[in-house]
Length: 334
Ligand code: PHE
Image 1 (cartoon, helix red, strand yellow):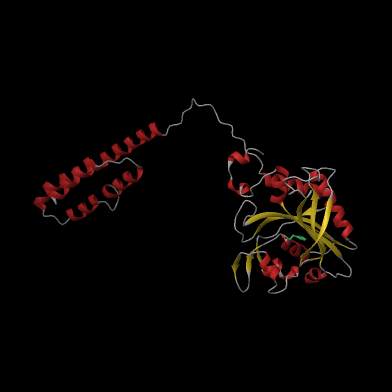
Image 2 (image 1 turned 180 degrees about the horizontal axis):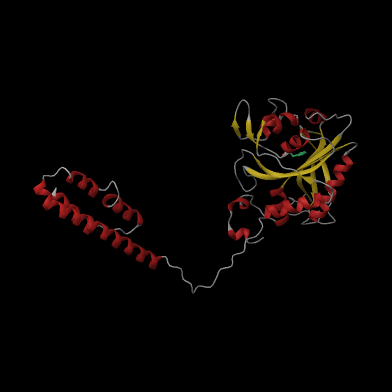
């Protein structure tokens, strides 16, 4: 035992702790309740009385040495970290102001424009079930339109998924209330697409819904024309191209006259004079029926636009990935 004590004394003297983990390992080994020194005190109880006279003082000495060494090691460590990571109080202060993300800016502008037309703002979940994302929106079972939207499934049977569009909020809004409804629904959506400069696996949409007695295509045109002139300038023209969505009939793609070249043709509009900003249409009677609204009494229009798409047009950004990379050189420009 005497030899063991001497060996530990050497170890204590030679111990170096250049970081706090090492200091802690020293404490655990020599000072804590489970330390080797405590073990020695335990075994000391069994030692013959004549030996105790020799070993006792040696053991006490080891204990004192270990305590003194711990103090010394922790002081050394404190001093060294004080010199290496101290704050230079003579440096001038840095004022880094944050700014509003370009997508939030565009979203807020869209909301303000539609609020002035009497639309309120509605919200809904990003994790959705099949009924609200597809079935209630008149997507037939096994219909290719479901494939069209490259869905991320979280669970199968019953299907739980990341919503592929904000149209789920139409359904949630209508099933929980009575017409009239007049709301826009901004939010994030997900599609399993290869990430490139033009496409991302998540992006943002603003959807609009107006359901009341006698709502017609004329009202849809009026709402979007008003939006386009406020967002892109008073000379902006809009046009509707026939299209297909399961939840609207008739359906139309919304184009605006190119606000860069004024319609004469440029790089942004690919020389066509027009740029597409979203989809729209009259709410399909099946959709109204799925939320217990009588399509003979009520009609409605709906539209949906990509916020990234509008931000890219407005700010002439040519890579959608920039919005989510959080590169300060990009964000500071807004
Ligand atoms: N939900 C459609 C989409 O994501 C957009 C849309 C909304 C079209 C409402 C028509 C009416 O692509």
